[in-house]
Length: 371
Image (cartoon, rainbow, N blue to C red; front, side, top):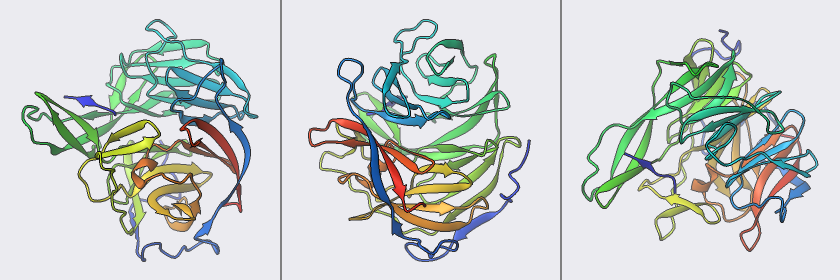
């Protein structure tokens, strides 16, 4: 359980707000086969590597430009060839140069891996083979790492308002996120927009801990912008990285999905990994956001039996054009989609799957028909 103690506008993305108007799943405007179920054909499966590495809770699957596969796990940063052959564990535990006490976020560039460590905070650059290039301590409290723009690291931090941690009552609080640009020396420039998210605090003894209800999502788009989502209800924003401001909002009407916590009051993210379930009626409408070419793919909280999870498609103008269902492993609840390990690359999707004993594997599927 995660605990927190107390210069160019994209040409086709014009300012304004687009809100689609149809029923539960609006009729798509640009595709003839909207609502189809994608067929997945397995082409590769990466299992535990015995003595070389192990899978406990694999996450943050990323694909490098050369097709190599990177995966974060407990005290591991694993690199595999495009064919799934284990190459190296890049994780060096410790507090010295080139060493880590945990990986919060990372980015892949053409010639480096940029890693964010939270405690103590540092940004570390290594080669794709794990050799240290440089590291720095940012002058900007950093919780997330999103992009590299004009030789600056685009990050985000949040500020939790003060509240009375003594007592038995739990409560909702508003937490604001801000984006920051960090240069190669660690100097930081904070942007003006504030992006509020709702959190839930729970009292424990004489203290309290807090966790988000809606997370702050930001996904790079065409190296010029971020696609943002920070609300529980359906809504996306386009943040222009050069202008440092939101230039468009878009979304569609959406029938909300009721939250389904188990009897323990927790949400299982992956086998053995859970977080407490805040007392809310609905799951977040937007669970994850992906960019595929010019399109923006939105994973919703809608899961249909025998179909899979509903994914909406928006074009480069922010217009809703398509939707389809992606088959996923059964048993996943809507609230568990937020941290479900999944990444799209060209005509393939990589995702984590668990066998009957709860042992994970990373599986690569070819997508047919093409979305």
